[in-house]
Length: 260
Image (spheres, rainbow, N blue to C red):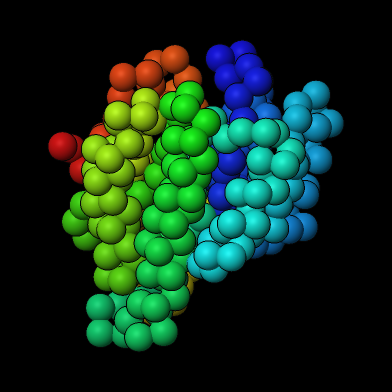
């Protein structure tokens, strides 16, 4: 129970890595705000946590909208009185070859993945600084932001590069307040969203999803997709005692795809 009593806000927590992180944090004793644009999905996750003896609230939030970010943070504070940890996980993408990325794609991905993540971090950091007890912020980036050639599209990769860049800046600005800021960079994750991207890619390339999956596995040194629970384990580690002196880092969970 390394997170006993800690108040944790997880965005994009209705499915995938966000859901796995919210559930694992609750297992470690955290009180969890399950935030997502999909309120029904968030309520399902929160209900499951409560049925297992944990404490959780569901919050409807669109991180692409600053007023919604404020409402999400206010709701979390109203429920728990503080935010000890932010997991900045909400994000969107789709598969698009380089010349088929549209202005609408660029604007949508930047609005949620880059702008939304930054302003969520900024708002939560203000609360942490005012409280004066430090905190942890974990941004969900991607190896796409570090040049991974198999990314879903160039605009998505650009947003994750932005997340990595402002992780470094935030860690420097917030260290004096005892706030640790890191980014986790997943690789080939087996989630509903990534499978959707895989199906889109397979359709564009004129092959079956199974053929696309097999081709993808051949490029992974460990030869396997990564379950979202494995990413959640790294995120929860950074929340706990083991992450006390880790800040300004980008940590790969990618089965060896990028070795750096």
